[in-house]
Length: 244
Image 1 (tube, helix red, strand yellow):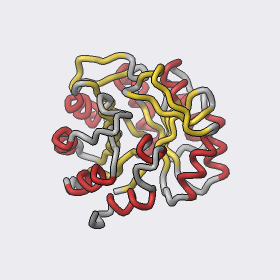
Image 2 (spheres, rainbow, N blue to C red):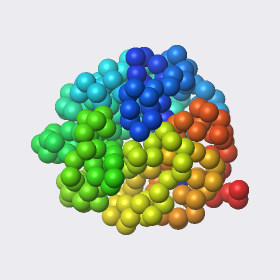
Image 3 (tube, helix red, strand yellow):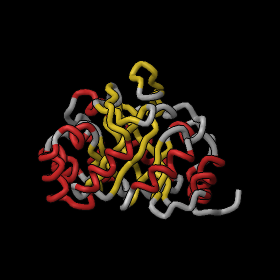
Image 4 (spheres, rainbow, N blue to C red):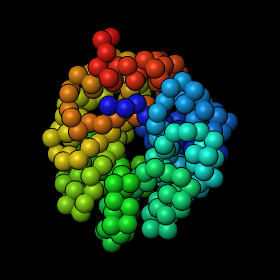
């Protein structure tokens, strides 16, 4: 299981929100490259980058930041936010994304999803973001009546094999993951998924590793790392199963 430091971009800076609230923003670095370099220097082997401006406007706004990170740092980056057309996905891949993360459009536009999967295969990741167990879209500003497990089943039927599962209710609060919910999602996913939401201490990573869900391939952490609740190295060790 891998640790993916999160770099959320708003206004050209690395920030973190609380429960997806754009009015509850904390700036942690003046540029995404500055944040990315810090995580890579600390030992990160993969980065998770989200264009918050793109998620809110519906089209990518930070591909230049993605390209700069990929060009200057020797680390793969998965990128999402505003990828709602095949041209937007192509732009992210061309800018250097190792994986393109789809959100809103994966649920709203089946033709687009099918084309993205057909063209890019395993490089397509769908983010299943939930509030109260139901899928949240449009930059977490709208919540649907679609349960997360049903959404994953539908997406798998269309060829999606990799997911990010985010518990928006816990995001940015550092209160720990809902382990029962993670197990429920693991029981549905036939491919692999990454978990995000509420990671606040090393014990949370040990708990996720202790679930021994073979399809849980990674954990995304942001605020806890920025606030030095644990280091990248310690997080990697925890997810590898090393004793606390």
